[in-house]
Length: 236
Image (tube, rainbow, N blue to C red; front, side, top):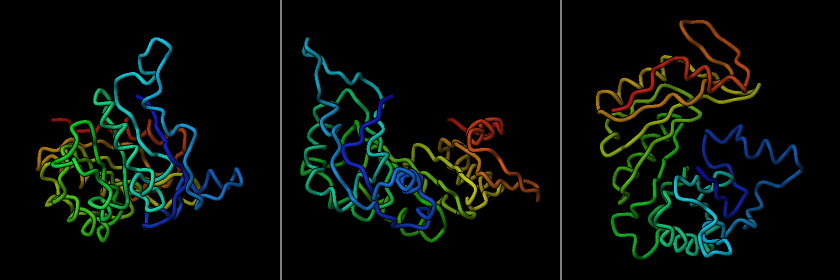
């Protein structure tokens, strides 16, 4: 597993962005998050050792987790990234995006029905954005599709969008001002995934977690551990 952030910085564009960890971290470091800039890691996937082999070893690469791969301000740089992604066919690049309506404007000319080594994950948080973004997502030519419901802000019905989806990930919001996560919302999405035979993972609880009518406050360090303890992941 590797991380590749060819640029950093982002702009809030969705209901789930309200307490974004990128903005929160940048605020603490006195960094202007709305300033989208290329990073020193821009060419990271194709850097080589003295013996001519790539420094980045084969495996999964988490792409652009300090921004959004489809953000408008990166349009002039994305073409080079696609070239590197194509060159490193031994790597599987996964990126999340809240800007699914820009996808067709951002793909390379030879995309066709998708690159085999690219996994695209559509991020949603409520029913309104699920209906808008997933109705677009289901029609896009992508070989590997995932959905992330994180932070999950309400109960969502998405079963009609689950055809050709490989994985659905659900998680809550973290930190003291997090909006609450209801366990019944999580379990409902799990049942929809089981009905459609789609892999499901409960990635993390919310800091304010409600189950059986009782609200729990969970430390950030324990959010993933508590979700794992629920034992409700489903893999086909």
